[in-house]
Length: 118
Image (cartoon, rainbow, N blue to C red; front, top):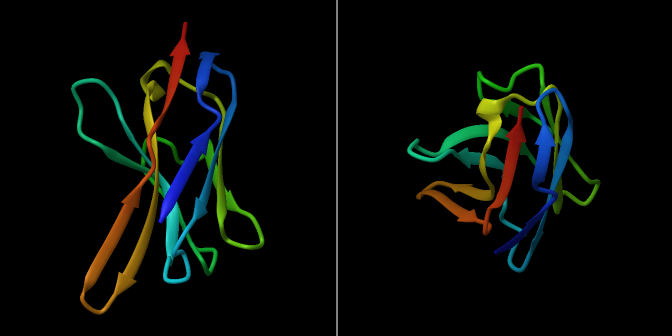
């Protein structure tokens, strides 16, 4: 599974940004796609995920501000980020997961930097 993320950049606090992530390769078994982020000196944390059935999950710090969606083919996910705060500054990693009886296979993209300035 290959994941290609795009859309990061510099934005002022209060502004908006949209990230995209396109999957390719052996994606038939992928059940979920989404985003995690990692700020300097902090652990990677959940931002948002969406299953192939459309069920979404958000990290507490982004609820009400970020929206995850996917295209009809379930191969591309989008993260609409609004009301951005300084603390949203991080490298955002696209992820895809295959949940199967033996466990979870998780795949990661290369990361895209989002910088929120004052």
